[in-house]
Image 1 (cartoon, rainbow, N blue to C red):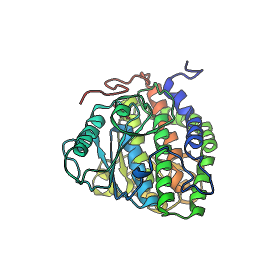
Image 2 (image 1 turned 90 degrees about the vertical axis):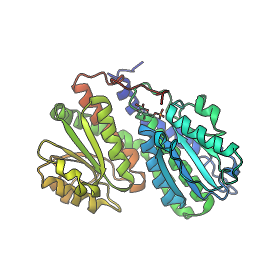
Image 3 (image 1 turned 60 degrees about the horizontal axis):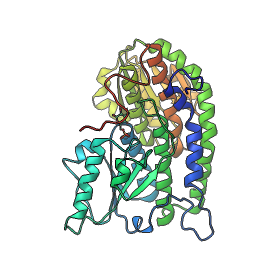
Length: 376
Ligand code: BG6
């Protein structure tokens, strides 16, 4: 069943190009002269009407996907979006307007905290107060689940069954759902031009083969690095903008399966505290993608280097400052910054995988974790 891979997690990492292809086929197939949007999510028209605000609830890796979703929805469609830990939101829900869409993201469709937050919102809507009219939407890899039973609208993510407890391909599938949703909203609200829309969609179509290229080069590089870092005690991951959530995800993957302490930070925040942690024993993984924050990330990386940290760069750049600063490079293809998270997460998944495998750990069944957590 593992098709020659040593663990399900590694197999699932390698399935990501196919997940992106399946998502493109399913969501981006609505090119009619008369269609309002090139995207087809099968959602009712009234879900899009007069949308003023979006609140997203999720846990773990799904919460990271939601942070990227927020970035995409705000930057492309101009709708104010907040992302909440479901476990926090249920006891302190945000005030909402009548036209607030609530989105619950859970790959399993069974996470108790996420379901409870949505149940609370559902109840608010069944009450008398007129401000609670906005709809509920679920994004899940299992539409036949408790989530599917609870909410009227679902975007099905197309990862196929994921066996490894640490989410990999379901995360990529969630990102694809958010690209589709954000672009759909942008097309309908005409917040981006047709040309831009087309350019982004064409860029997405290139992603599967870019992931394949990344997988090919990274397998060996991450395995080599894993050899050196198997006994490392602490790791820091930094990124900015749309790649800040990828820094969080890289750190979470490492924690979950290798039990190494790891933190993800927005690179600009390092100087406000976490920089005190740095020395030669604490490697820093920096995601540096050309675009709006590249120079900033490089200068944040320079600050880490000055504290003797070993620097690992996830970047398409292999000359100039990047070549000078980074001790090790995990190269990714040069794609638009907006699309880069689907690529930058791949070397971080592989790095976590190879470190855990090197440490001889049970990669697919890490201690204390379960694939779906059905208790609060
Ligand atoms: C945790 C898992 O318990 O649940 C994480 O260990 C996962 O890997 C999180 O991201 C959320 O799960 P789901 O199914 O709601 O996306």
